[in-house]
Image (cartoon, rainbow, N blue to C red; front, top):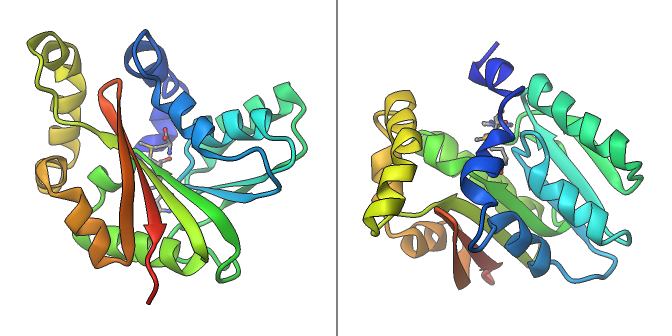
Length: 210
Ligand SMILES: C[S@@+](CC[C@H](N)C(=O)[O-])C[C@H]1O[C@@H](n2cnc3c(N)ncnc32)[C@H](O)[C@@H]1O
């Protein structure tokens, strides 16, 4: 049992309080990065499947696979998929560092709000697995917390910042302030562009040629 067994029920409040109201909602930004074509998308560490759900709803030609090791988080995701009657979705309960999925089988992989809570070794294993699974001309989409500059934003973000620092004291601050372009290039990804969103940034990266 891990922390997400408890957080699963209220997890989607994160979107209601911080990510959706006004401004740039990162979930909409991610959804708009995916073309309306027959593409295969992997929402890696999908949690309650918020990223994958809106893509599957908008792009019925796509296949969206959600993968997470927390059955409790996936249960919330499954409820949402069932409610919308989507049949272009597969949800898998597996470890993201050893997915057993076929090499080069995805056009897009999304890793949302995960890397900041990983120790460097886990982060490396996740990014290596993502690199293995993405097609040679495929894309990695990263959603992560962005350093807040405006005072009103700092105040509203404070409860999340404190929680993250308390839960992952060793890694969060390092990742939060790290040069992300440099970090991802180490694992074979080139930053194409970054979009600033509510409290977060969406990064679109290309798999670089080996
Ligand atoms: C903060 S949630 C993010 C959920 C979702 N991606 C989002 O954008 O809201 C982090 C998720 O990563 C999952 N996770 C962390 N490490 C994992 C691993 N090694 N394999 C599979 N899932 C993992 C957790 O179970 C949790 O559901």
